[in-house]
Length: 515
Image 1 (cartoon, rainbow, N blue to C red):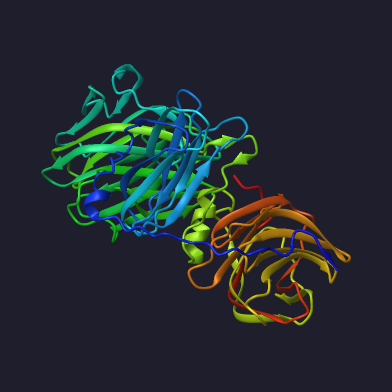
Image 2: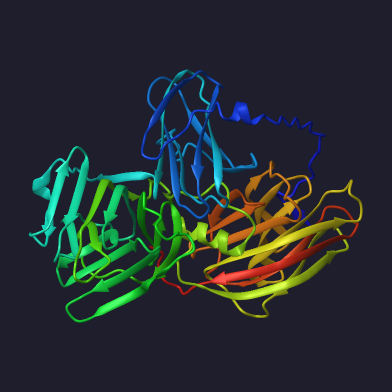
């Protein structure tokens, strides 16, 4: 049997040098502030480290732009344990050498290190930007142009200037909005507002308003001084309370907001308070364009004194490359929910889906050179799905090359696609037709998993995307509209290889286009 792309590999011992830096040295790394671009200059091969504080579950983007010279920036993010968790180089090659890490989702609170490397052959300047939401800034509020904003009701005082907006209520007023024309994109967008001060003698409420048509038609995301949040849609016909005013563990009573955010993707709206995710709602946007703006109110229907200072309102959208949306180089952690949320934020997976199968334990044995497969899920065929599993390979001899894989697009015993990882650190997609395997994307530098290896394949109806140990291997077009799935063991010699799979799952969704 000819297995192209699954060739024998020469394994050379690698010397790893670990250096533990004292806290005092780490503290010397310059800090990144949100929305405050920084710049630097790097010679060829030089690096510079920055750090920023992040909260688990937030949604952040970092961009490194080549400004002058022959610089070719690369971005790497290291977590609180100094493990590499995200990276990018040449986000839109060959059109752009810039590096962009979009919709990054920290999975623990703490200080993260950002490394900017110059992988180019010449020196030059770069600019580094950290912001909430997506990586492309589509619009930023100009509070200096008061004529473009309207206050409703007219009786409430507002002040715009000095890059800030002030809303001030006096009895009997209990609510006020500051709005302007702003067309929100149809597919994905993020709105974030910075709040510098809020106060009220009878409680305060602040938030973001979208799709404003009139005092009877609008949608509102709001938090208050009691540590509660709410999302509702008001129309002339009815009032839809999609999230009732209720406490959230991420908001402490009396905690003042510094940042509020709304992010829309794949029919889901996700809500953020001080860069902490509060949750999301599916299919919760009104129809029509409407206006967008800021909300302030009191905690009493009879009104009261309340003031809120807003220092910025920004609209971000995903960066589009010549091949489409950015595919992340790495995925976070091993938890299914965390991985799915990352894929949904990157719009590789729609927000609507369901767990179609979960097999706690399974195994397959190959007793000869070649590939042995075991079908899972019976005769059920899948077209659009995520297939993931944890696997441990047990070759008859650790000196021999062996591997394990996921089988998908199966049409018959000799027609399927294999997503595989071997014990030399090579991984790839290979298609079998008859006795031969056609090589697909191949990567030979996959770092081992912390315990078992992690395999994950995404099929969106057009392409297959493969991750091994949370590292992106590559993509290729789908071969068949649908097929059955399974697991496999790969032996390169006439000795047995056992692959033990744990928590093999498949998540699928209806055959509808992804936003």
